[in-house]
Amino acid sequence: MVLFVVVSVFYMVTLVGNTTIILLFHLDPHLHTPMYFFLTNLSILDLCFTTSSIPQMLVNLWGPDKTISYLGCAVQLYIFLGLAAAECVLLLVMAFDRYVAVCQPLHYAAIMHPHLCHKLAFLVWATGIFGTLVQSPTTMKLPFCHHHQVDGFVCEVPALIRLACGDTHVNELQISVIGAVFLMGPILLILISYGHIAKAVLAIQSLEGRSKAFRTCSSHLAVVFLYYCSATAVYIQPRSHFSQKRGKFLTLFYTVVTPTLNPLIYTLRNKDMKEALQKLFGRDRNRTSSVE
Image (cartoon, rainbow, N blue to C red; front, side, top):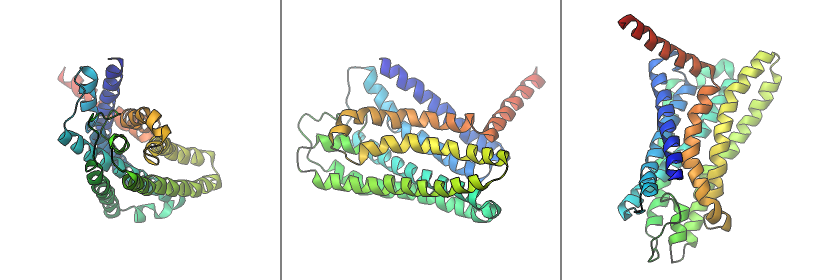
């Protein structure tokens, strides 16, 4: 019951925080920039990602019946894995946006034009669909043991691989390759881009310019660190001793905690989001006062 309360609180904060970011983007014209366009896509991803798993998790935590149907498990796996892969690519796209903003500021508007932003957003969602269609069908075809007890909070690939009774070497190799493509590949490119960003920031003469560039990039780096560290530990070695013992905690972390922290990190450390929130609440107060 304690875990039920904790997960419920985190889920409510996730819903409120990410929905607020989406509303602010659509209501405030000053936020109609590539950075906030991708941040809005991240909020949509986080909302779908948590909703695909947390409601079922709460049902199982609430009562004695801790079951999920085979079809429900398959649907959860397809959606969960696809959105997780899409988020990996989206964080890479956001790093590219920050790289252009800091290293090519004079050409930023020409490079990150709306047409390219929409293409990159389409690429994010398309790669998520591709990733889940590659891994999910082979996972659900595994010969599962008779007890059918998934050692985890959600139906994800490592937990289902550990449930299988047959030979899983092909599946383990497949998920390791998928993990390398969607986890190790993006994180390497993100680190390279931030290496160039660090050089550009150090070359800025004014302290105010350095501070602004640091604030712009630090929020994204915090999100990248939280998400990639936990997901990589679970997926790179799906049947290892480490992932079996700590996998449930790490899954709970990047499924429940990280989507909750994302909107808090971006809103609390972002001047534009704070101003948009103040305008929104100020507008609501003015309307209330005029009615009164």
